[in-house]
Structures are given as structure tokens and as C-alpha cells.
Length: 130
Image (cartoon, rainbow, N blue to C red; front, top):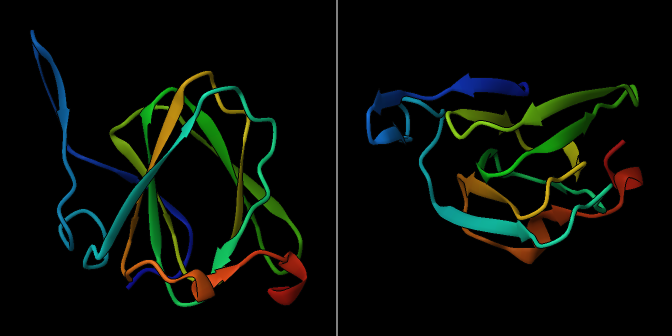
């Protein structure tokens, strides 16, 4: 099981009609998918509020447009990942603070998780994590 943030290169099949990308649990990502949701950004967002998940691992994929995912670690150092192609997925393990910034107009992010949605899983104040 992965325990650090990692950019995953997903399969990409191209032909004259376009590109096909797919995700298979355990083959491409290190967990069983139990929850799927997506966020659409109607207008560009400079910086969202951020969160961490207590016991959930997450994958984020750009279905449309682009955005940056900023990871803040316990040393308060930041790593920025530009997510702009749908054949790349960002793996984020549990207890990892992240926020999204610099979204393009009409960006859509797809989120896959290894646990079902539970509001109590969300840490919304970074001070409780660090």
C-alpha cells in the first residue's frame, strides 16, 4: 500500500477518434473504490479551503480543464501538482492536507476513495492535522 503522495500514469489508448483512459482498482490504484464524486468549477478558483481525510485514501483526476493540487506536510512544506491531463491521477493517502488552486474555467475534478462518504472523515482545520 502506498503511503505517500504519488502521480500515477494511467493507461491511454489513442486512435483517430480520440483517447481512452481507464482506472482499475489494484491494477492502477492501490485500493478498492468505494466512493466516487466530482467537483465542477464554474469559475476559476484561486484557492479553495482545503481538507484532509482521517482514514481515507483518495485519487484525483482532471476530467476537464486543469488545476493545481497543493499538498502541505507536517513540516509545513508544500508540493504542488499540476493536474491537466486525464491520463494522470494523483494518489493522496489518508491524513494528508491538500487544497486546490488555479482552476481553469469549467474544470472538473474526479475523486475516487477507498471508503464511503462520511462527513466525520473530513479534517477541515489544518491545525488538527499538523
